[in-house]
Picture 1 (cartoon, helix red, strand yellow):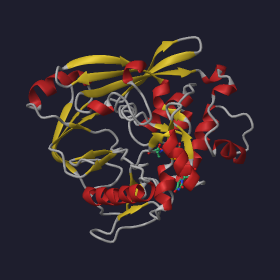
Picture 2: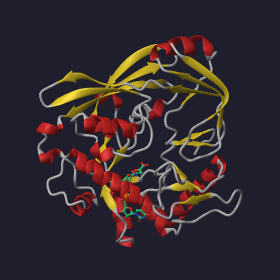
Picture 3: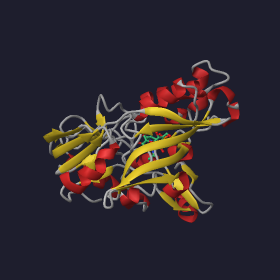
Length: 349
Ligand code: EPU
């Protein structure tokens, strides 16, 4: 057991907000968790931090916990696929690259998403036509209140667009490891690859690839993301700040009649539609806008209207204030509520 405790520890967050935990506890062994929760935390519920890519820290948390184990291994081999297990603390993109290098497909469309493996199931990360829930075999969790370990199979996770059972109960479970069911690239029929999301086929064509494999698709996605989304290492951001709103088909049709260029996608069911929040925000004139008040560093990316950015010294409260103004504008103009995708710490939406 290796437990490290640091007072007033800086908290990594891709927004680049200056944040600290009163105390940060790190452990590389999930078996330490029952003892930590039973005694060391004296009833306090820590904020579990991974890559900090989906957090907007408005108030500093008193206690934070990081799981630092980073092993990846194949736990079962089947004819057409394998079960690959990764600890929660593994960096997501490093994991995607590991699977591709070891001859597995299935995660190529999810290349370059910031964050950790343990965070991926919580909001069911998705990009370029794939959601991680489609590839998950099981999620191993620790239940804080009882000190027990449980396993959720994929159906028990209730995955939906940017949603899962874990997101509704953030203080109940802590994800310790995730198992993925991944097809072997060598025997992969080309039809299994998802190439239909806008931009992928064009990017493959630009790369000169006629018959793509999983690695080529990952490369295309990486190129698209680098071009379309600001790099958190250069300017602080948490990817899409808002979820794409899901509306009844009737309401979406009425909006479409008024705004024929509005991108509308099929929702989870026949009667629901997903709208592009980026388009709505862009139409309100927010893209590239920077707030003058306060630090003057909170703004909207000029590359993608869905991404709020910290140009330097923006606080969590400033970014949240900006988000609220944007959502009020979208509601006033289109009658649609948009909601944040990242988790807010120390504030409610
Ligand atoms: N658009 C605009 N203005 C912009 C950007 C986009 O009008 O500044 C319109 C365009 O018409 C475009 C449409 O919005 O066709 C959709 O844009 P995009 O393909 O970038 O997808 P998105 O719906 O905005 C979602 C995910 C992203 C993911 C991309 C690609 C959500 C909230 N976001 O964005 O995920 O990378 O699709 O699959 O679902 C993230 O969650 O952090 C994230 C970056």
